[in-house]
Amino acid sequence: MYNHDMERLDKQKIHAQESCTDVTDRLADMAVDDEPLSDESIKAIESSREDIRMGRIYTLEQVMAELKEE
Image 1: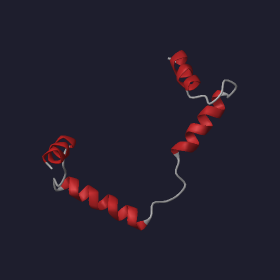
Image 2: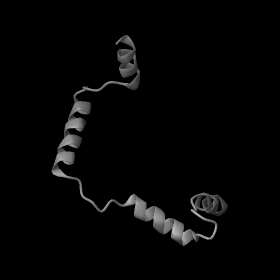
Image 3: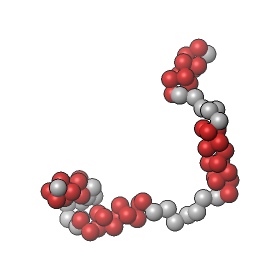
Image 4: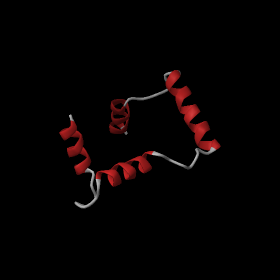
């Protein structure tokens, strides 16, 4: 397992001299978003979740079929 993990880290290097610590630090920084969601974004997410709960959604196939008809 260790070798596989090291290979995955090596593939994430920006340059050959980048250390594994630098890679993990960079990836961790990318994973954290310091900017909080706006009230508008939170409301949009809540609205979308309600649409999903109520079945007001379309599959990709349904959308593609509808676009072909137009």
